Image (cartoon, rainbow, N blue to C red; front, side):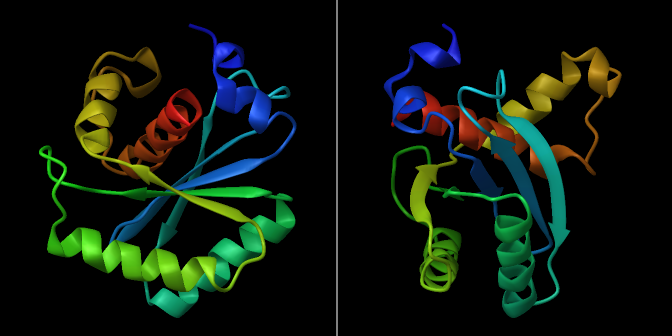
Length: 151
């Protein structure tokens, strides 16, 4: 199915979306502008030094890229229950969303890292290998795809 066929595509048409795969070492990023881009694309990573630094880096990206919507990946166990990491990420999400003035959404990111590894193993773009330097941004791309498909 084409992205343009999902209801969220129409809802966010023309709006630039940033998705975040938050980690305690590396934060993966992806962007998508429905109606302009054919699909979500990796935007790079932020190296975690402190929560304050990550928030400032995200705010700079929001400003420089004219981001209008932020999608934050929240992990859960496969049975839907929350882990300690879920709680930590929700707390950071709350802190981040209170400092920015754009629409923010949570998106389940369960198994996105697993899916990112599978994609890399099946893609000539990554030489059919898992590139751990790119895994977080590929995961952020999957989070954004899931958001468009399921919103």
